[in-house]
Structure formats: structure tokens, C-alpha cells
Length: 228
Image (cartoon, rainbow, N blue to C red; front, side):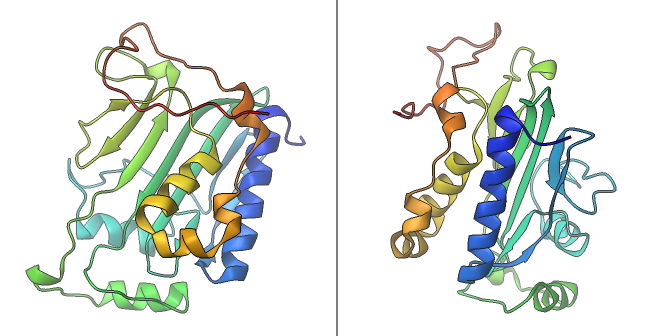
């Protein structure tokens, strides 16, 4: 089954981003897979990704160790941070997604040469309290089938699992990547035209999908529609 419609754009976007990140040394490991028969783009192996907050309502060092050692990510960045990209499609259209930026949990300007180096470091780390960086995971979820009061179809989760800030609609991959690098990696953002020039035709067709439970007047995440 060949990718089509939304799936075609998103699969191609991830392949282009992956190839550029690895070639430019921004990513030190890539772990994405497109399963056209099941209509999903996710990471591999995926024996059950589990909850974002695997051991509680807040992200912990143990959470990061689990994601890192079990390769629960699509891309590992050179500082050890992780990007999780998972889209599910029905008839080529986005049915649900999970997009997460997981910062490396320790303070300091570290860079790693390989995923093996990161896993060795993570397996043996016993940090002092002053070494821990309190950086929240940033996660965008889209799942209309589970929309209910206080749980918008598309939402942003930060700091704790109960936080669900409504988002305009499902998030295209270039939008997510640009947000992460513009806000958290300003030096890389300025250094690479590729990041600033990311775009996709899928953005042109995105319409707001505010659910029946949450009004557009409520605080929410929005953006300017793309212009053809």
C-alpha cells in the first residue's frame, strides 16, 4: 500500500527530515518505520510504547532511561534528546498522532557521537540533584475518538499528564519540528536554511477541528494557515 494524501506528505516529510538531520549531524540515531498495511508511521521496534509518563504523572529520569534504552523514539539528537513521531492513518488521512520532544534530563552542554554512547552514559548515570535539569517533555496528541470534556481531540501536554491545552487541529510534522528547533535550538535554527524552510502541502488543507466540548474562545494553541 503506497502512502497517499496526508500519509504521503507526512511520510516524505519524515524521510527528508531524517536524512537531513543524520547528514548534518543533528541526529545520531534514526528509528522510524512506515507500515502502510497498518496505516501507521512510528518508531521501531515498538513492543508497546506505553504511556508518555511511564511511571507517574511527571516525567522522571527513569522515564528517559526507559525510552532511550528501549529505543522508543524516531530520532535521537546529538545532545541525547529524543523526538517521538507517530501518525496513524485511515484511507490516507490522519486519524491520530503523537509528537513528543523529550529533552535530555541532565544539565550541561553535552554532545554525543552515537546512540551507543548515550545508552552507555544513561545506563551508568547516578546524578546529583544539582545535575538534573527540570525540562518538561513537550507532546502534541491528536485523537478525535477519545475527545471528551477536558480532553480535546488535539491537545498539548507539558509538565504533567493532566495538562491538555487545546490545539487548533492535528499538527503537521514540519510545524512540530520548526517549533522544537526555533524555541529550543536557536543556534541550529539560525545555522540551517533547511529548518527555516520546512513546509508541506498538507498544511494548506488543515482546518480547525475544535470539538464539541471545548470552545475556540477558550485558551488554545493556534497558528497562521499556510499560504499557497
